[in-house]
Image (cartoon, rainbow, N blue to C red; front, top):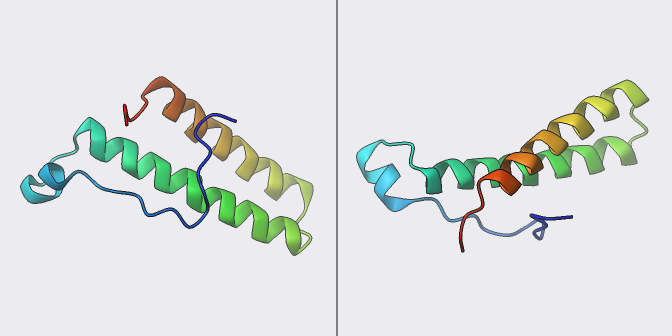
Length: 77
């Protein structure tokens, strides 16, 4: 799966974006990577706790959309 990263990977944010209160493409990428990481964690936790199929499907769709965004706009790193 493209965009795979360890669940505990630190995600670097764009210092220019933070310093100037801007949403740069680098910062947007970092935020989407965080969303992917956090959604994977939530999906794993809900799967382990026996969540219902509808709730899991919702998270799987959210994860697929976030991963698709990463594929369209790679970090270049």
